[in-house]
Image (cartoon, rainbow, N blue to C red; front, side, top):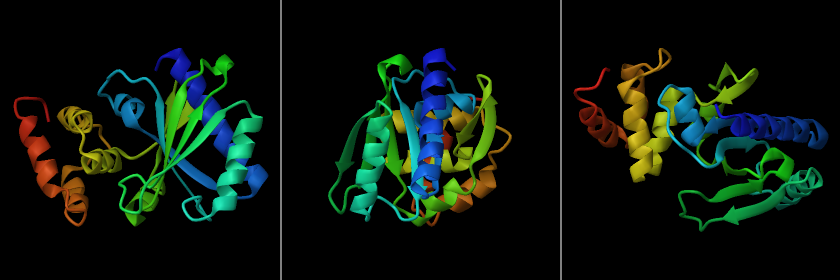
Amino acid sequence: MEQRFATGLRALQKLFQDASRTLSIPVRFALIGGLAVSAWGAVRATQDIDLLADSDPSPLTNLPLRDRLQRFSERRGCTVEWRVGAPDDPIPLLLRLELPRKMHGLGADILWAHKRWQREALGRTITLRISGFDVFLLHPEDLVLMKLEAGGPQDLLDVEAVLATPPLELNFTRLKRKATPLHLAAKLDNCLGNTKGRKL
């Protein structure tokens, strides 16, 4: 992992851990996006850090908590923007952070879990030692499901890359079983088909 991303990710993890203690609201989070894809062995370029997060209560419905999280982050030098989608938006709430300049001014997008399976995925996170510190990663099966659900061209390429060189933690039978109730089985089969000829 590039040093600037390692520094930024370490700062983000500390930010949420400190927020959990200070605000007395445990925040669970895990790395998703391009860095997570790379961590699971399918290296690709990325420009920012993406996290999935959840808390109880959740800022999805708790507006005072949004304000508290924003003030907490701003006091630590971050630029903060809450992006609120429409009720049927696939991303109803996103926290956009820009880290302080001393942290290379990296941007971070924090997607707040809004579905039961996403919250359950945060209970299955895996800790890996990367660049000298522990990184909280979404399980590769859950990462694949999130990418399938997002469904963008880069998301599907990421899925194919992970499936082509699957980490030991990824079980194909279990992944297919999880994809079915989420109506993602057809997309998964298509991505599997596109990996023919690669090592599976």
